[in-house]
Image (cartoon, rainbow over all chains, first blue to last red; front, side, top):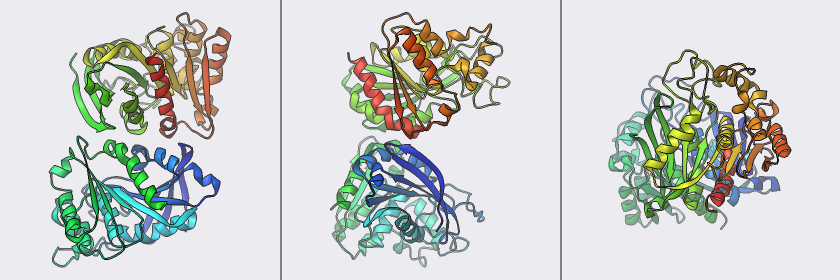
Length: 284
Length: 284
């Protein structure tokens, strides 16, 4: 699998790089960001955190706005952040809205035409990209965690819940928690998976997956700004996820942040806390 | 002077806001960013650091990419970052190039047609904006410092050198140091000030201003990435400024950063060090 270096910038003693590669799963060229902290120069195998971004993002938003490199540099962890959908395919309808198609892959495997051949971001993240990272960079085997924001927070939750044991820790900033019950999710699931009655939505909804989780102990760290307009518009529904966790005994922590909204300013304020949380789990 | 709040985002316990206002000096509506750290809620009068951005930037780049809020939050300092030129005037030729006109005001007062009525960023920064800040926010009288990047690093230097005692400390990331001798500067000075022979260039060139500086002791902190392509292209010329400082006894510190380029990744890596430097001077 050939990787092409798109950019490389020294930051906090390490390097923030962007690579592109041809993806079999999604059938186009894909980019991802990787932060390599200064500890890579000591030929150490380092743990990895995956970051999944939200609607409309490319790999650039997290790299430029989250300020994660500062913490990863100190703690010696690699951070990978992929794009949010296939791009450049020009599938009819893929660019009509910010919340479906390009920039809105929802980290699932589509089953419906015309999406099912390319919109397989779930396979891309959990299999293909992971293999690329493991075979091209000095990562510590099995030492990986996952986090994300909004659509990507949900992506982190389902990638973890559908793959018990694959990630040592899981966290999400203002995640969509129950897409089967919110406008964004209903639109995306209907388009990618078909109608609720026949589309196996519960296989791709974090709140539903918690109810049937059957694996090693897992903790879900949910972070939520209380001035988030998408919270009040009922797009996120963390209460549904927390309720499902309580009912099934899956430990969940909900951190409520007074005055914070849905933006990268909010993410930047708490990303250090999340990275520390993951590194603590990864070094256990 | 009426201020309009354009945006407000909680970040690191304080608020990153953007305001717009009508400017008399530059004859159009102008935006600036202001970070108000959590300490403002204690009704304290706080010190202020001005940040001047480089070519092509609006107020947004620094706000989103520098990660300065984290340090300002801890140290209790307000950070103001204005735009880089007038906007929306549609002066013929103001949008033909990235390095002249819109986004490229060079923090001087133009004397040539058609620029002289609006391209007065020097007056805007050192008088009008400062008055707006002092009369609308709880700032500690006389406790202000200035820093900037590239074109804005030069702006910080000339604002300080032309106003002895106005700023408690001065620093610059990869500044244009001697615009009379580099391509960017020659183009801008010729356009805004007229030919070198008649345009009083030495009144607007940091290296020339150092040679005639006559005020209270001043120190210039210059920060420079060594993988900066504009350094090797001789747009920045820090050696000329340092030489002038040595010749005239103005203390200058040149921090050389191995492997860093001209980007906000470089700025983010060292902005905390600069903010600490300024706050130390401001609290003296």
